[in-house]
Length: 153
Image (spheres, helix red, strand yellow):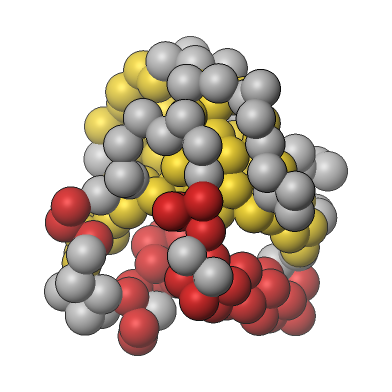
């Protein structure tokens, strides 16, 4: 874990509003990933900067115990062309605590990482938190995913 500065960025993808109550987010986000993969959403995103996939948690209605939006998508250089059925959002960037989750994505390794994050005394800002699925996340049974949690300076 270390603090990093993230520059402002834009993302286009698909989204859902969910909550962590009663396991709802696991169901909703799982379905969102299913759609993202089955429909080849990443290949349909215009103006992509690279092939990394972001899972962004944003528009919090309070803290992580309240409803929030999840967006699965890719970083883009423009939000002028958002395909029908997709969402686009700009993020301000800022100071983030970086975590690295290593292991089998199909066996909930990220759930464990988020449980650890929720137990830490982080001074979170609840503007946007995200997971970055890059080269090291291509093998889901032996993946490395970077997790960024927005914190106050």
